[in-house]
Image 1 (cartoon, rainbow, N blue to C red):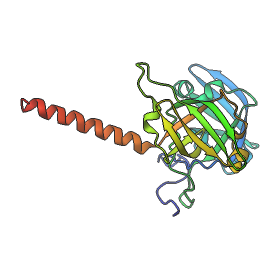
Image 2 (cartoon, rainbow, N blue to C red):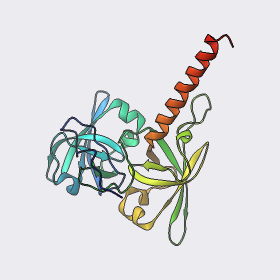
Image 3 (cartoon, one colour):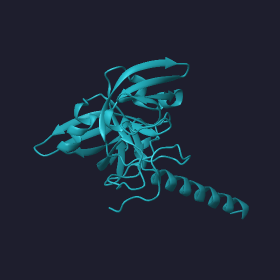
Length: 232
């Protein structure tokens, strides 16, 4: 795959940071300080902190957060209330392990897929089926309040999805969830290897699926307005 030339690392330049879903390091939350409709987390991650500066972006379990006070192999992040409500970081506590990835640099290769770090919601780990060479994992996704299909409508078989910041390929999907296959390397080098049935994980669906839905909705609305205007 060709090296990316479209983004720069971090957000100090004013550009949006993006990620690849290839975890660089499993870090550990060492402190949680609740604030008014927010929280400050302190995360130990020597690798990603080695060249971090205030204002850089790091994905924490798939959530794009801005670095504050990087020092001694750890860094701080401020998490807004909206992010806490939408992601699994609401349940973070000292000792919680998290997947860490620095923002994509201009010279880096895109090993996974484009991940924005904007979590769409959470899913529940519903099943694990280990085999000799890989593990099949099933995740259930919540439905809409009216009973309609939730995030699963954006997921397609063989498509990409980010689970706790890990770029994965979907092996199966239905209205209530999806399945992926995890190889030993992924299990060993990310937090997914320690997750048990019932665990909550962050999801970011492929942004292209949301663009397609919006375009189709706009076209359908335009067609409906045209028919009304013609008196049909």
